[in-house]
Image (spheres, rainbow, N blue to C red):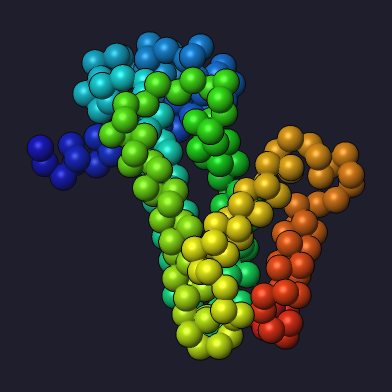
Amino acid sequence: MDDTDSIDSMETRSIILMRARELFLALGYHNTTMRAIAKAAGISTGPLYFHFRNKAEVYFHICSDALDYLIADFRRAAGEDSHAALRLKNIYNVYKSFYYREPQLFEIMHLATNIMGGIDLTPPLEETLNKKSQELVLIMESVVREGIARQELRPVDPLKLALYLYSVAEGVFHSNRTGVLQRAEVSLDEMIETAIDLIGYSLFEREAIGEG
C-alpha cells in the first residue's frame, strides 16, 4: 500500500466513524445496521468490513478515539507548571471544552453506560474502554498527589479525591444533557464554576482557584 492508498484508507475510516456516530444518535445503536453505515458513508459494505468486523467494533473505535483525544487534553492540563488547584481547574475546563466541541462524541461515549443501551461489546473491547476511562481519573490523581507533596492541597486520599472530582464533573454534564440545568435556568459554565469553587473552599487554597 503506497502513501496515497494509506491516506485514502484513513479518510474512509474517518468518514465511516463520523457517519456511524450520527446514525447511532439519530436511530439508536440497535436500529443502526452495518448496511446503513456503509450507505451513509457512501461506500459498499466491502470497504466497511475491511475496516471493521461488526457494528460493536465501529462503536468501540468511536469511543476509543474520543477517549484518546480527552486523555491527551487532560495530560496537557495536568502537565502545566502551576499550582495543583489551578491544574485541576484547567482539567475541568478542558473537559467542558470537549463537551462543547464534540457533543456527538460525548453522547456516544455515554451510550455504553446507559443500562438500556445494551451495547454488545466483547469483554476485551469493554476492558480497553474501561482502562482508558480510568486513565482520566489517574491523571487527576497524579495532580492531587503532586499537590499534596508540595503542600498545595490538603492531605486527603488522592484516588478518592480524583474519583470525587471526576464524578462531580460527570454529574454536572449529565444534569445539562438531561435538561435539569436548563429548567433551573442555570448554565453549564455557571455549574462548572460553582463546582470548582465549592470544592476549593474545603480542599484548596482559595486564591489558587481564581482566574489565572
